[in-house]
Length: 100
Image (cartoon, rainbow, N blue to C red):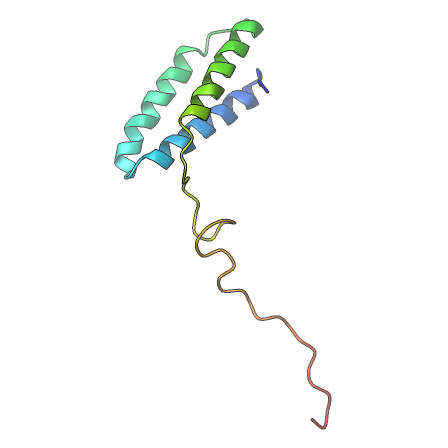
């Protein structure tokens, strides 16, 4: 599914940055990759023809599929993270009846 509007472009850009962060060990290494990704998106920002945009979007989506990380980073408290629902709050129960 190719998005040719600006929101589709920004979604693709964010996905590219998140994928680069999955493969990077440290943030300072990721920063260089983020700048490179930004330069690639800016180099094609002047393309206005919808067919060319669709081709660029499809190529980028294909690259994202090829570089998909087998174990992507998830924040620990997010669903699928190592601490998700680990410390659930105690349920609020009805007080015991009088005389117990």
